[in-house]
Length: 290
Image 1 (tube, rainbow, N blue to C red):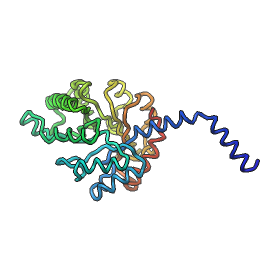
Image 2 (cartoon, rainbow, N blue to C red):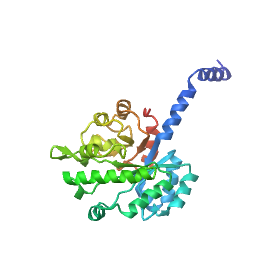
Image 3 (spheres, rainbow, N blue to C red):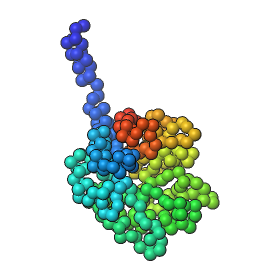
Image 4 (cartoon, rainbow, N blue to C red):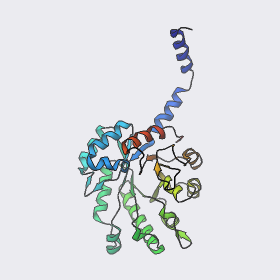
């Protein structure tokens, strides 16, 4: 068979395959894939604009912010950041912004700067506004956990007024025992599902020795975003590129069901943050997200 005949037969065979369906799946995956910018925090601290451009060049279409402060995003005026991301074809489904819990518990009022962050989130076109972390002073106490759950409901109502969805991002400590319960169980039971969603960090759930699938099934419909980073098979169980660790993401997605967004995040690197970011984009596309 000569080269021309081989090519013709190859094309004919390819046309007979369900290409449209495969392309549709790939497009949907790409629309759902994003990255938590904390992954390249070292680059962002030196050259935020260059970091955002590197994310777009790697193929990501969605970014989750972790650099909002004083009405600016990574030191840029909100309007300038919006233009930058729009020009690069990036969308911003979510951001990490923590309220000042001390001020709230002291004054019983949501801090004005946090409400401003919600308004700026709307301007940036976000869907989700996520609290990323609880300081140690607010953990390990059931009364504090109940008060925080009450605050989350209040923040959820403020977000809802603005067309946003409020949420919380977990680590492993939320699964540490507090009497006969833990922070995560309190948050899941005491927050209103209509007001508070969960950005589930699958790595930290597994790090806490909790089965992600079992937890997801226990609270169906409560999760809107997944943080995805693999876990190294080492004593420290540090984060590692997707596919090089011990977490079976395909099982989680198949048995736990889909969510609107799948966001890469990595905190430790064998090479550097830029190479890890690029590798993770190629690998997350190979997971069965839908």
